[in-house]
Image 1 (spheres, rainbow, N blue to C red):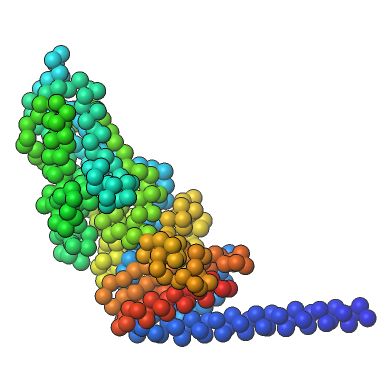
Image 2 (spheres, helix red, strand yellow):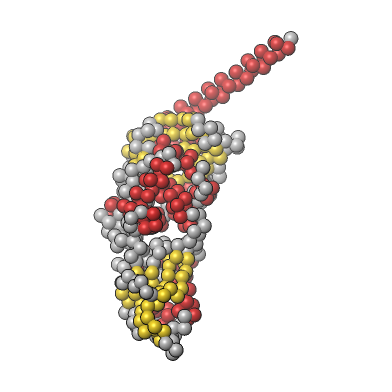
Length: 412
């Protein structure tokens, strides 16, 4: 009798396993079918992040244009290499002698550190939601140093980066989709305080001019003319202001798919860990990081604007899995937008199983639409997935297909 009961239990377990397997097969078939809607050349990979088991796959090894899924590689590298709690400094130096009357017989040097949030309080409030680095806080440092008058001028030092304003997509000149890149960025490259339609020709000089004007208004006698010059070695640091924590910058980068932030972080990686503050050097650091985490990518910029940024769904998922083991992994995941709630997925996946259960990164350029990230299911399973759609001829259909795939992933 006991043997019969055992056989029946085993039979029931086998039937449940078969039923579960059949359901999983049907779900995968459904996702594969959805993948073909709205695009002609697509790839998909879904993996159980805990076990590493492949749940569904189609064209997973084919490399495709990433669009802004490129930012996954950029921000993962930045968080891990620089540290989630790190801050980017902007420094002020005095070069010369300060006499008893408070006269600096020499010049001031405003030295950029690659902070993409440096700007005026008005800009930070209106454009960055209050998250940024107030350049005017350096006024206190000048007064604290006892400086009342400057015989020289205020120089801007942006040499932490090269002076290429853009990336390959725009022939390295200023792009409408990015803004001018600079080692001493100011107001995200915009020219004005209230109208964000035109870009500055030289963000570093604009930053110096704004600070000089503020210092004069505070009673420091300083020539109006500013210029570009590298800080001399003997100059004394008199002040420093620091960006918000890097994890907050990465959050802004991924949630709103901010190209300017992504490209600045790429150059910063090159300056800190590569041979120079260039996009090429930064991308090299990103490539090395991806390989260290069992992944890989073919990228030429940090944001994904250039069409030749490519990787396979498997490489994207491998990065996502690798970041779960990285010390900065928790911040990386939390810095991706929550489906149906914020940023580029605020209006997507509401009313589905993916609502508030997935953290994803979108990507869109002409003919390309991508969605990759993690889903945290009611069953307790964590799924990593990547949907790379190329040859997109109907963006609405592509988004709808991606959302349905994500809902299916969130149901496992």
